[in-house]
Length: 399
Image (cartoon, rainbow, N blue to C red; front, side):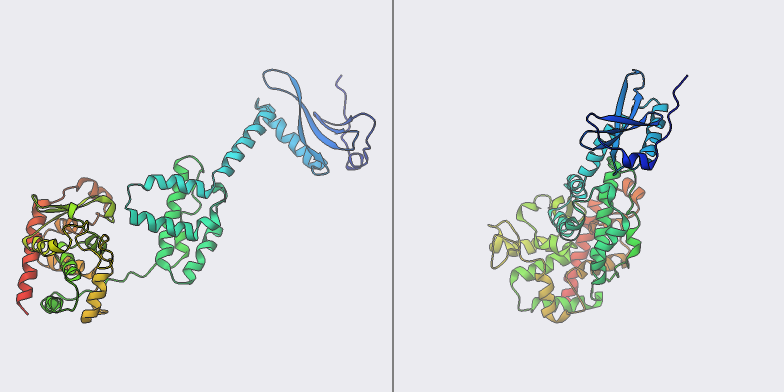
C-alpha cells in the first residue's frame, strides 16, 4: 500500500530548522523541501526520467524566493511534461539555450545582417539609410533583443521627429525598421512583426511637386542661361540636365569613362542610380556638343563637370540649383524641375508613356507589369531624345 504523504503547510516550511545533516520534508507527488545544515531550503522534484526510468531530482528554486504555492505550480507544470514523456531537466536546458540565443539577437545585430541584403543599393542611398538609423534608432533600440521590441516603445522613439515635422524622415524610418523586422521573421528569429502598422500613427509627409516652368517659358530660360554670369562648367551642367532628363546628382557626377562615344551612349552605373541599376542615356548631337565644350576643361580629369575648388571632385549637386536661383527663378524652377518640364512636354506630344518612363529611369509601380516590361526601348528613346534636343535648340532661337 502506497504511503500517504500529508501536504506541507506554510508554517511548517517557514519554521523548518537546520540540523547537523540535511533532511527533506515531503509535500507529495515527488515534491520535497530539502533543508541544508547552513539553513538553505531548496525545493526538489523527484521523478523518473522518461524511457530510462532512472530516478533523479530537479531543483524548483530556493525558499523563500519560491514559495510553497509556486513550488506546487512548478511541480504541476513538470508533471505535465512527464505525462508527455518530456524530461523537465532537458526541457529547461533547451529553454535556457533558446533564451540566450533570443537575447543575443539584438535589434542592432539583426540590423547589420539585414544591411548585407542591401549591398546592391547605391553608396549614397546606403549612407542616408545607415546615418538615419544609427542616429535615431540604434542608440535607443540597438541592445534590445528583437523579440522584445514592441510598437509602443518604437513609436515613442520616433515621435520627437514627428513633433519636429520631419515627416519624410519618419516615413523612411518606419519603412526601414519594418524591413529589418520582416527580415527577422523570414530568417526565423521572430514569429511575427509587431511594428507592421506603426506608420499609421504618424501624419504622412506632404507631397510637394518640385517647381518648374511652363514650356512656353523655355525660350526665355535658355536666353537667361546663355547670358548668366556663371562658369562654363555650371552652364553646361544645367544644359546637360535639360537634355538628358537625369537627376541633378546623376548629372553633376557624370564621368568621362561612362561615355561611350562609339555607341553615342552615356552609361550611368547602378551604384549612382536611385533604383540601383545601370541607366543608358542616348547621346544626341546637342549633348555631344556639350561634351566637346567640356573637353578642354576636364577631359584630363575623371569628372565631366569638375569643381573649381577641388578639380578631382565633381561640382556640388546643388550648384545648378543655386545658379538657376541667381538667374531669377527662385520659387519658380529648380534643377530637378527640368525633368518635369521634359516629361510634361513629351507626354503632351504623345510619345509612348513607357519610353518616357524608361528615359526618366522610373520603376513601374505595377510590380506584375514591371516583371514583364523589362525592355529598355533604346531605339525609341534615341528618337525621342533627339526630338527633345532639337526642340530645346528651336526654343533657344525663338526668344
